[in-house]
Image 1 (cartoon, protein in one colour):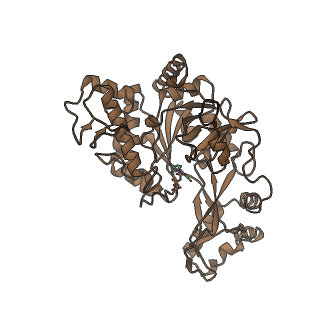
Image 2 (cartoon, rainbow, N blue to C red):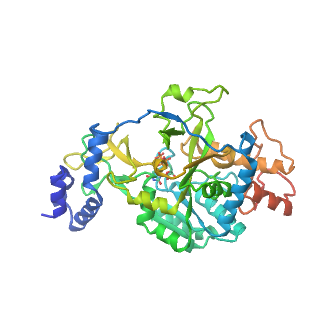
Image 3 (cartoon, rainbow, N blue to C red):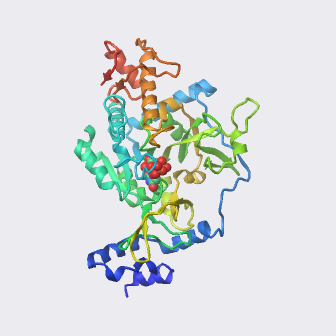
Length: 474
Ligand code: UTP
């Protein structure tokens, strides 16, 4: 018998091959290659700890206090230190030390869009996709600092081919395709509540992406870290695929990170309201941690200080800067319990599977568990981890849901507010409502302005003749 099948039997996972003998030789090979991806020892540990509740389960709240952060100048931060940070970040960009990194391997189930999320159209006038927005921002930043940027994009097994095809079709949006690097993230098997691996079909396992935290080991495994090293890139600017407002490479953020000798830095925004669904930056026994909104007790989320502000107000918006060798260190510790290993989290999901006869089952309720790694779990392992404040309007408006909060609609409006704010700051005649929203759609291409500074430079040279509906500045 195939030794892999024997190992699965010994691990109590022999059912994975229940239909093996019925499969064609090609299908058998496919099933075996998927099985070979599974780390049975890791899975056994996860079953023990996360499913059977032995070992450390749940979030330990002992000694949790709000984490300090570097406030923006208008909120009491030191303007000189911010200016120094910006200058240091600009110098790093000019020296070619920085690469951009987008995690785009998620399944985007909440949005319910058919296709990789990065291909979703978001801009108000031109309906540019998320990938196009980032590509144009990176291209413009490359011009500005005289060093074209390398861009790493993490995909999943499900969306890799479609993502690469999209870039090919659009000729990499004007980027040098030799500087755009795609790699797939790892997968984890979904299991039932007893820890038995679920089959998606008689000939394939139910495999799911291993979470955005899987990016650290995927960066190592794919050779991305070695590639960075060979190009003398030591700093990675990390952002998510769903947030077109993001400053893909923000000089002040990069500079703060470099000047403080931080191995992993993060941006925070003050939570808009106590129940806002953002993770919280906290300190625990001297280490920086992010506690998810679902894990921080409601009473703590609502607690206010003597200034009337929320005590646990530092919300995480999934923007990080990471040191290359720190990523390598974390990736090396991956797997089961090695030094620096990120913990897996459990998510109960509806996992399409098959019944005992091999017929498809579409569950109406959660029937299984997926295991995911979170990138912010690397923070407690980082030296000098730093959190800086950013303005939400400059960095954060994700597309998560089809409707309501964090939807295409709210994201479009936030882009419009940003464009309107830049225009009004330069005296353009534009009426906006009390929230800063203009009365008609308009759009600023990243080639014209992708942040306040670049917009100001273009406006000084070639201001718009008129600001009317459908204005497109490029
Ligand atoms: P989300 O937590 O929003 O998950 O991912 P999602 O899978 O995109 O969407 P839902 O929950 O199914 O609706 C945040 C970011 O992390 C990336 C996503 O692509 C997104 O940029 N991500 C998430 C990965 O790259 N891999 C993963 O396994 C999970």
